[in-house]
Every structure is written in structure tokens, then in C-alpha cells.
Length: 136
Image (cartoon, rainbow, N blue to C red):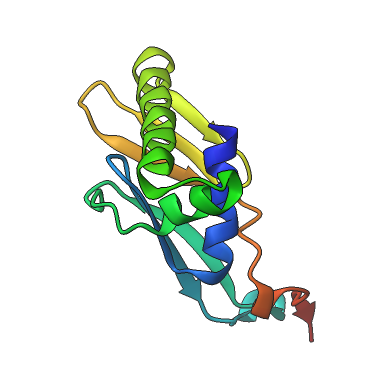
């Protein structure tokens, strides 16, 4: 699962959506810079990660990442991704949650609903890197 999370994290650097076939899509939402008037603070723009369980169709992006890392063909890379997704489902059903390092936590409720909680540190975005909040 850690390896899958690493692929998702790297792909989200340059893509707004990474679909994990059979699981769902991780979507980066842009949040513009904003001013908190009460505190006289300006916050930089960020990207926050969300999860859409309806996006399950394999668009090939994640599989191509595995192809490049493992120097293998599409069908072998697809099998590797499918095994990792199977591990995620097993962990979700046994433990109720799965940690995706640097991305967030995927949870499974007794009602069969998947819930994603992104980590607070946001995701690194090359064109937003280094921007910080400041006071005036």
C-alpha cells in the first residue's frame, strides 16, 4: 500500500486526478489564496486532495507509472495494481481504515461507504512550493 501511495503522490504533483482502478479517484482541488481579516493573515493557495469512489475506470495513468518503475508491459503492471487494490480492500474490511502516507486516510464504514480524510499538510505542488502565509 505504501508503494501505491507513493505512485499516487508523485502523479498528483502534475495531475489533478489519479484513478486507482477498481477503488476510486484521488482528485486535487485548488484553493486560491485568501485573507483572514480577523487575524490580518494572508494564506497561500493550496491543493487539497479529495476522493471520489465513482471514478473506477482505468485511465492508464497509474498503470503507466508502474510500467515505468518496473520496466514491464501494461498487463503485468495492471496485475500489480490490482494486487495492491486487493490488499487495500482487505485492510479496509478487516481494520476499517488504510493509511496512505503523505496523502490521507481511507476509511470504510459499516454502511459500505468509503470516506477519505486528507492529511493537513496538503500535497506538495511544484508551482506553489515555498509560498507561505504572512501577516500585515
